[in-house]
Length: 287
Image (cartoon, rainbow, N blue to C red; front, side, top):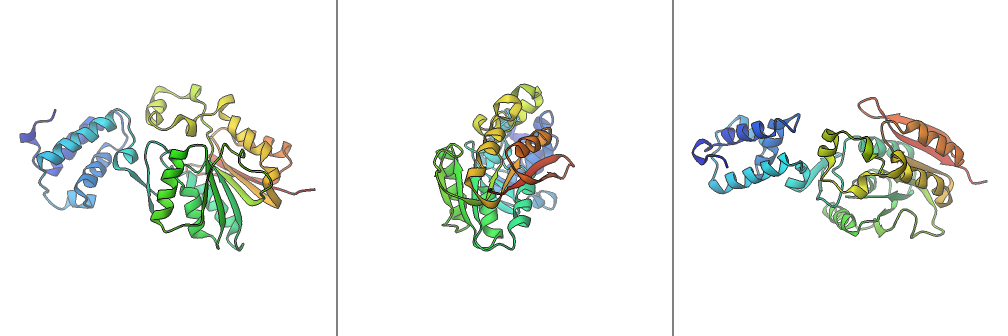
């Protein structure tokens, strides 16, 4: 418990939170400010310009949030949202917390389809819906189907689409291609599970341990789902259609070999903001 008498303003409370989180976060003060500003519904900049009083009720809630964060619960789950592509998305424990690396996947898709009218897109494993929603906003009248094996994840995705008044994304429960037969798409895009849990350090396990296993981990050194998508996607692509995937930091060469074996051409690797290979794309020409 924290002593109420010593924490009568925001700065004191933030210092308490910063000290508590310093052993589990690289940016403990920032996280403390985000949590408290969310509770107070104010811009965090006010913590640096004003002396803000704190009620006992807010103090109790903040202490609980700090304790939850200390146990490994992501900030996005605690405040129920995450910014991505300069948009705010609803996030809960049914879905992964969006990472900035995934913006590269979207950038590549936009560059590929920016001049195409009404491209048909299939997103596999949509989670919170961020990829499909951003593509819907950025492209010319795309026809998007977004799938996930988790109905709870799709509920979040639908809420996010509704927030941005998007009503024409087809959200569908499907285990990869299980619900598809003869459909053809110009682009199949996915950020599938690709983490090998056995290779993670304790620190890495702590940082993602509260997120859904089904969206993170894959068998065979993290490649099982990537392999399945690569080997089965071509039958659902139009002639000259594209497959675009996000993958792990050490999986680019593996994905390239698999795509070549599956008959893809014009295969291209892209690096993220940390100069790490993060996405791969290729086109399939039906013979």
